[in-house]
Image 1 (cartoon, rainbow, N blue to C red):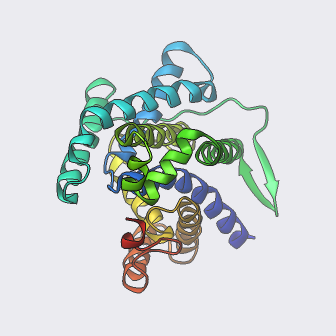
Image 2: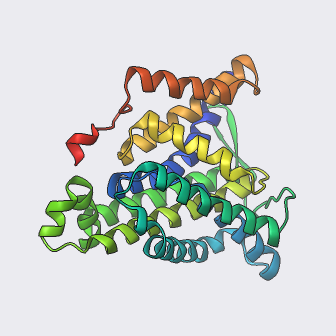
Amino acid sequence: MALIDALIGGLLLGTLFALVGMGLTLVYGVLDIINLAHTGFMIGGAYLTFVLVEQTGIHMYATIPIVFVMMFAIGYAVQRTVIQRVVGERQLFVFILTFGIAEVFRGGILATIGPNLRFLEPELPFDTVTLLGARISAPNVAMVIGVVITGILTWLFLQHTRTGKAMRATRDDAFAAEVMGVDIPFIYAITMAISAATAGVAGVFLISLQPITPEAIVLWLAYAFIVVVVGGLGSIPGAVLGGLTLGVFMRLMQFYVGSGPGLALAFFLLVALLVIRPTGIMGVEHELRH
């Protein structure tokens, strides 16, 4: 029974990992950059939820559309005004700039809200549900539902809208897409905006599952990196698979060897996979995409 609990717990954790990884891999696939500011949007969304709930009394899940719109707008503005300047440059420049943006998020949260742990317990009409004998908390159930809905809406947008199709064309061949009339800077900005918005939504669920501080930006960036490397950079299905894989792996390691070595072993998995298969489970070679 304890093993079943660990497996289901891993899948639940992996669901949130998958949502975080989706946004990071989407930006890499379209813009060809690794965005170190990604989890700044996530933790920013979590703290925005905390402030809205504390100041207005709104139900925390009612903040999701507000967080989505605000993170979308911030992501769009950041891409247009700052990140666009380093697109196409060496990754070192991108790392420095996006890390600086993440530090702006962290410093802003510290200055306005403080370093103390923050947590929100949502009011829901049930406490737990039982699956295969394992008890799943209500916030975890809500998180899975929210992540699935967000993932489906993102997939529908990419597959069935003109902008989504332009994003996929840019991912496959930016030069050809531009020749066909695609506004590449606009597509880059929309991609960053969607990535930021989905990360913000992940933050709404995160603060209902565990206490957070501004330092969580760094920890969750590490998780996001492992997810997209395991699944394959540039592959959204790979991000989902990578998230679920990491979640189950971490919970199993905690079950067998304790919670301390779990993250270290997760990084060992990352290094091993980079040696064995640098493109990840579902990734494609860089040269094939460009």
